[in-house]
Each structure stands twice: as structure tokens, then as C-alpha cells.
Image 1 (cartoon, rainbow, N blue to C red):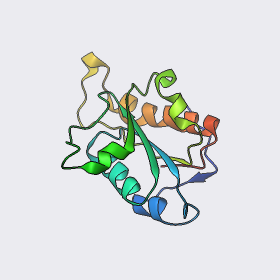
Image 2: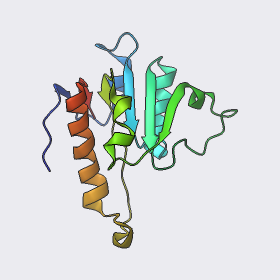
Image 3: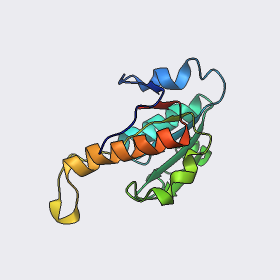
Image 4: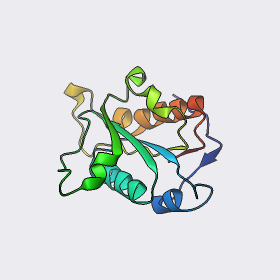
Length: 140
């Protein structure tokens, strides 16, 4: 699977740059595949705290964080969706400025089709292709 490269590709691990500096000095819309995971939820939190619009999806939807303790979770549009079924999340990309891909696994389970190649690589390529098709400016 090959992906076209979005107009701007951020290769930095310092995602705060994407969320806090120009050209996103105004509100940006971010879509975070895997936004309910450990890293993805931090990306969502930082983006919300910096005034950005955030939509996130993952297999289970919302993270296991209570809104009382984590009020920022109420500002995110959460969706339960499988990255390998883009019809279930493609509409979130409408008017998206950036896609911050946070789907990954640290343990394979081939009997459940969870392999490093599929989850860590193929999911990113699929999300990148969808971001390009939707006209997102950046993919991280």
C-alpha cells in the first residue's frame, strides 16, 4: 500500500508545534485516529486546551476518562470506528486541517489480525490516503 504525501508532512515527534503555532493561529480542526489511547488522548487534550476543534475515533470510542476529572473530553467529538472501515469515520475528515495518527500496538495477536505491519503501518497508510483525499493540510 502506498500513500500520496499530504502538502505538509510533519515528521517531528514534538506535536505541540503542530497544535500551537502558525499557520494554525486560529482554530484548526484535528482528526485523531486512536485518540482514545494513551498518546492520542494527550494529543486531544493539548489540542482542546489550545482552542482547536477535535474529532477522534478508535475501536472503543471515548477513552476511559471521567469528564469530571478530565473536562476537556467533553469538547472532543468521539466515535467508535475501525480504521480499516473508512466509511465509518471518513466524514470526520470534512474540513480537517490535520490528521494526527495515533493508532499502534506493542503486542501482536495474529489470531485476531493484530500484527505490527497491519496496525502500525497499514493503518497509517490508509489514514494518510484518506487525509489526502479529504484535502487535509497535514498528516502526522
